[in-house]
Image (cartoon, rainbow, N blue to C red; front, side):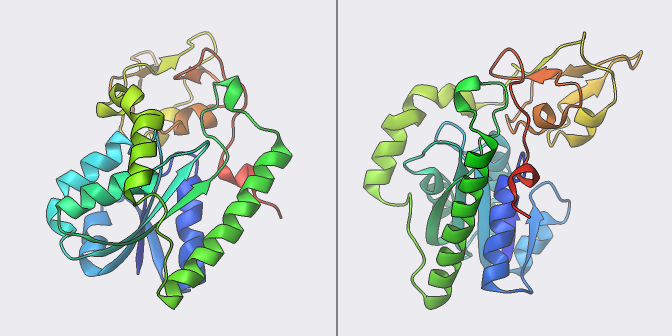
Length: 257
């Protein structure tokens, strides 16, 4: 089995890697950003794919990756893991339906609640202890799901018609434009930005650049809303949905030692 993931702050990567460790110590995971991703997918028949749900939909970058590699999915057996900060009726089902168009076989789906990566919206923030509890609960759920997969009874979360209805009318119908195309809403506070270039290196879309005099970063129009840059910026100069960074966090912050 091969694990594939798209991950902004590490939640989806962590979940895929944990599932694989429980399933088989020899299984490996690879990001869709890797130049070897398509080649590795081609070599494996059994896949697990993980990603963060955005407004009960797929990140645009992942959707484009699947479409650009449409010939890879035929007859692949795929288990889908969708991570989310709040809820999603059919977070796993959105990718499942897309992959079925390319003749993939969907073996199951799993919804995992994780610490929210949207660091500039105060209403979405939880305490450190609550986020640590979320991760612990996620770990237990993933271990149970991997054991069920081994027994031949993988969970089917987000794949049925009722889940589709909930996902569509719960969020996706009202926020479809948020994920239909890449965002041009990423903002850099040039009074805070020190031009360190970390965001430029981190961005999976090469959507950030340093201006000619290297004094601050500048955003483009191809943001896939992964929040990687905003959560890693050392001066909290980057926002997307909100006006200021409330609390930065990546999955490592919430792992209990």
